[in-house]
Image (cartoon, helix red, strand yellow):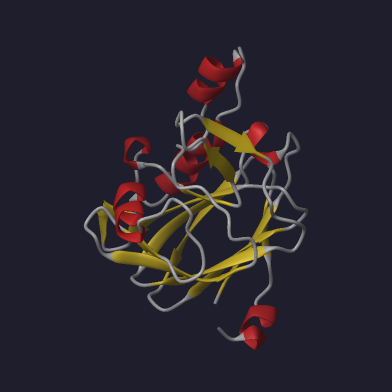
Length: 202
């Protein structure tokens, strides 16, 4: 990774509770930055040339033999091809188990009567520009999300992220990609404070 390129490319900022979509070429790097600390970012990607190939939680966890993914781990597609590799990680704790938050999730879990559209809705809008329908959005790689699993009961707890202001993860694209990225909208995931997420591609 070239530090010089990383510092030259300006940081783009995703506003709190919103999302963006963009393309990457094979070999490019994506840095995702927690600008203020304790803010999750949902990431999903598709093969640019065949959108039926998508990032897969199940395949990735199978091949890693772990639910804790960090530097050196490849992220696989539903076809068992490597889509991204984590090449830098200053936090080391992320989630690849839970689905992106959504209006329905806010209704069912929190009883919200006028819920935010969540990361799922934000991704659906952003990815629609690339012809990707909402039903094609699977479990995302939840950058900085701190999920604890009780080894005895299997109970899942969502805890405040371990990331501090300026912490980051860098991914290398292993194929041409369409990428969706959010500043997460779920209060519990972000220690009940909604903040921006920064990113740059080089």
